[in-house]
Image 1 (cartoon, rainbow, N blue to C red):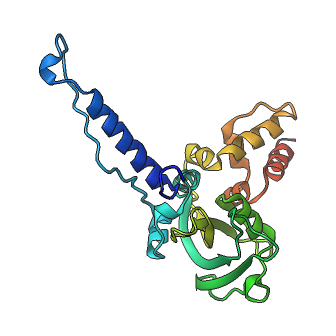
Image 2 (cartoon, one colour; image 1 turned 90 degrees about the vertical axis):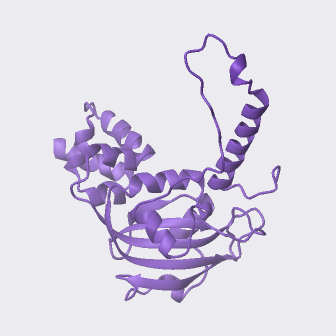
Image 3 (cartoon, one colour; image 1 turned 180 degrees about the vertical axis):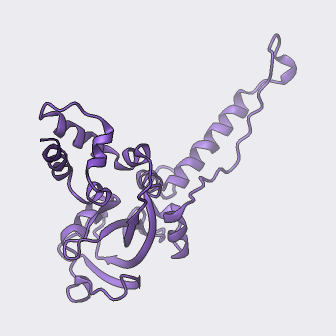
Length: 245
C-alpha cells in the first residue's frame, strides 16, 4: 500500500536495492577526495533478481508460476526442501475461489481441480465431489505456508505449495494450491535433512530431551526419512525414544 506494488519477495528486494542505490549515490564522494585509503570500492546496484533454481522451482516454472507468486518465507522453505527431494512423481493443481477481502478462507471458499498429472492422474480427489475448501487444505490456505506430510488415505509423501494470485487486484491472495507426490533422496546428508526440517527439528529435539536423552542430530536417522517429514514432531520423537529404550 505504501509503495503501490505487490508485497512479493522480488518486489521487496528490488525496492530495497533501488533505495540503497539512491542513498549510496547521494552520499558518494569523488574518488579524488578520498585520501590515505588502500583501496576504493565502487558500488553500483541495478535491478537484482533472486535466482530461484532447482527441482521444485523448475517444476513451478513448467506450470507457468513465477517466484513472485511465492512468499519470501516459502521461497526459503522450498530452497531447503528441494535438497532432500529426489523426484516429483505426480501433481494436482487446485484453484481456490471465494477468499474474503482479508485474504482468508471462509465457509463459502471453494476448491476445484484444474489439472492432474503423473501418479496423481488416476487418483480421485475429494475436491472433485465436494468443492468446499476444508481440512488440511483449508489450514494451508489460512496460514499460507508450504506443507509437507503424508496423504491421509494413501500414506504417500506429499508437498503442498500455496501460490499467490498474479492479478494486481488480488495482492497476496492465495489462488492456487499445487500438491506434489514426491520421493525423498535416500542419500541426502544429515545437514541437509536438519536444514529442511526447519523449526520442526528443534521441536523434535526438545521432546526427546524431555526423556533425559542426550540429543544428537544423528538420532533422526533412526526413523525413516519419509516418516521424519510425514509424521508430526511428537510422533517422530516417540519413535526415536522407543528405539532407544
